[in-house]
Amino acid sequence: MTKRSVQHVTFTLERTYAASPAQVFAAWADPHAKRRWFADGDGDNSETLVYELDFRVGGRENGQFKYQGTKVLGNETIYLDIVPDRRIIFAYTMSIDEVRISASVGTVDLAPAGKGTRLIYTEQAAYLDGHDTPESREGGWNWLLDQLGADLRRADA
Image (cartoon, rainbow, N blue to C red; front, side, top):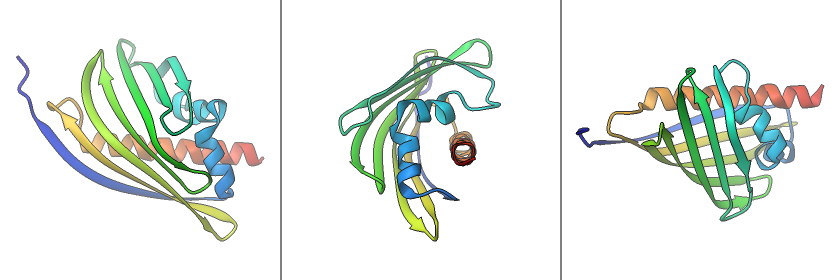
């Protein structure tokens, strides 16, 4: 039997993008745009099996990814609060091969920064039974926010 444990961690990441708050918000809200940077990003050694996004308060996002060639990484999200061009709050769980590894609340805060946008991402997470680590999750979000930046640059070109 697995030893049961929970580790609570909060972290905050910041990025400034050379895109308007409306453009950054749209990259989270539009299913095709979000799939590009969130589900199908370059260089993560995974294959998208399922990706669905219903971006509205109470809406859900579901992703399943073949990870490291054999494992299935699952992500289930519900959107709790959305203020267009300003704020997104969501709760999500992650699993590997149907074993729950974490439960989190994420907040995306967008603000004008000169001609661009300052994005502040804050996550409050509970890592379950030693299956995930704060360092891994923070690294994952750093990578995702970099993918978002690359996608915004491609869209601007």
